[in-house]
Amino acid sequence: MKAKPGVTPPSEAGRPFVGVDVVDLTDPRARDRSRDTRFLDRVFSPLERERIRSADDPALEVWILWAAKEAAFKVFSKLHGELPVFRHAAYEVTDEPGLPVTALRYGDSRLALGVETHPERVLAWAWNGGAPEILVARSTVPGALATLGLDPDRERWEAARFRPRERDSIHGLPSALVRLLARRDAAHMLGIQEDVLSIECPPGHTGLRPPYLHRTGTILRNADVSLSHDGRQLAWAVRVARSVGG
Image (tube, rainbow, N blue to C red; front, side, top):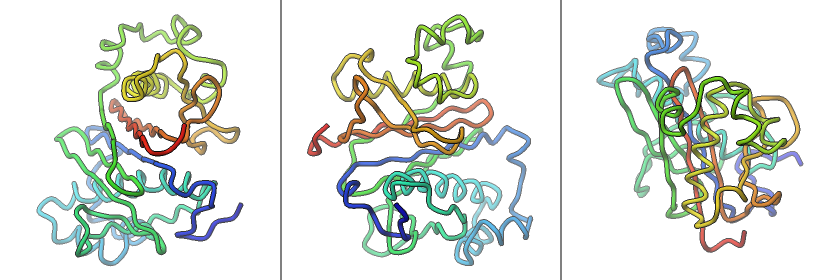
């Protein structure tokens, strides 16, 4: 189904979606890009570029806006039923009168945004609809290994921890760890056993398949999950809406 910006397929209307993105500020790739005019022109709208220029910390503001756009794109990917065109500058972070939080605009659609900053990371999350029941969490790869009691040699635990369709979506140790942590939190929020949950992606290219929560093989319609990892940083978000049947 080809969806225009701001148009949600009827089958997705009312679904609770969430998106999350993390940037590892200690990674060499996260160097200061606030003076890279070609990068700024390609990624940010004129209003966002002015926001960067006037920020107390322009280098940090770049990654705040970047993470917000990435998180929002994950929500719109599910709302539209397919991957929309990701032209970064078309996704604009904006402070709008009457909205209780910062928002992101894409076409005629708006998403709510949350942002957390830390000397080592930027974390952003986006969601559609009204008041959310959202858990947003983060860890590092070493911290996740310690929390889960795992050996970094993935061959020793992967087969026992994941169903085949989950393993198909994994592309490295951070990808595996963030799924385990998100699945654990989703089970707690839903009040069900973790062993009936899985986080699976539809068929397609690695990295271009949004994750969905499944319960005994069926996609949950009352809950959503989003995953992110960058460098040593891991982040995940789980959203549950009690009013939508699952």
